[in-house]
Length: 445
Image 1: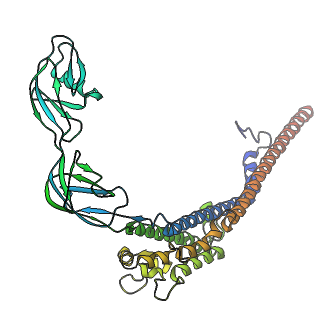
Image 2: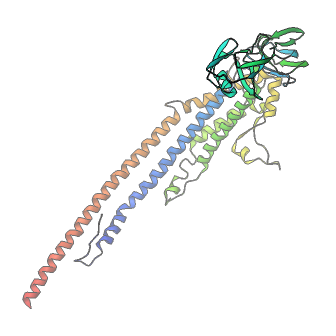
Image 3: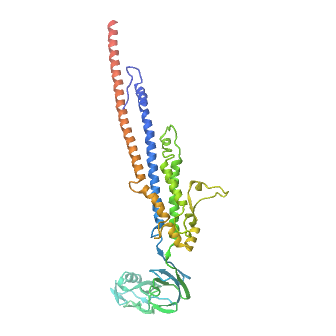
């Protein structure tokens, strides 16, 4: 109770200590309930974690066979990107091209002497009047021209002279300036790019060309006597498939670790702390061990198909670790975890992409590995599935224990209040008796 406790004044007893000891006896059953609550919470948390790992594994398996992973892609390479760069902008015919660049496109340029105007005036750039204030300096003129989108040219102060450059490249580009403040202009005419593709000549106003080779964008960077540009045949991107396989192996190993760590962690008999009570909440769980066995069976078994076709993950470089270097099984191999040899998978993709696609389940010829795994995972991960039911049951059990603790605490509070009232009544009765005794003794005396 709050405040100063004035106890035992009449009886001479430490009633606060007596109440505390009595309440400690009353609280003994609560400790058992707290241990049950810690164990139930640990079980619920563990089931939710395993469920999340299984959902991630299912997503990784689905990605192995998804159309996005196996979508056809193309790549283009230039033998000398300092001369000609290339990229695919649409479906391009596979094969090689030779690009010879004899001249690059450039913008028209002009340079003028500049004299600040004595009064407000304007300078005409490419036929467009740009207003200037009285006494506008060369830097003021540069800022005014560059701030006017309709001027059609960029301006810069070059050694005290006004230099203009057309915003567009090509022989038709212009960078003219007229007005009282400019004089002694010198001009460098614009030029078109001149190049050939496979012997066919082209001229274009820009160095970025999209209409010389269907599906390709060529960027001309320097003159050359011939730069080879090659386009690959459309096909699945090996890098995307290897990445999907890596993600699957990671998700599978995380699932195996989550299940094994829970089912092999032993309980602590007569746990005295909540930390001890949380341990071993799923030790030896038959449901989880059954899931682990199913996963191991699927990754190690064959996928139905033609005798000559790829039919096991191990043929793609997805295997369990086998050796620590001394010929004994590694800890990960004992745990049933997978490893991926990316080089083996890439080699199989180069040699037999259709076989890899069928094995992983991405072809239309029939179900593959991903579908087999999904058949096991679907009942576990779907709404209302096995894990949903177990988590719901665990949550209900945890709620029941929490409610029991709350009711127990209410009873404890009521019991403590009653004890304090009883001891307070005892003190009052003793005080009355002591007062009566004192009066009698005084009368006798």
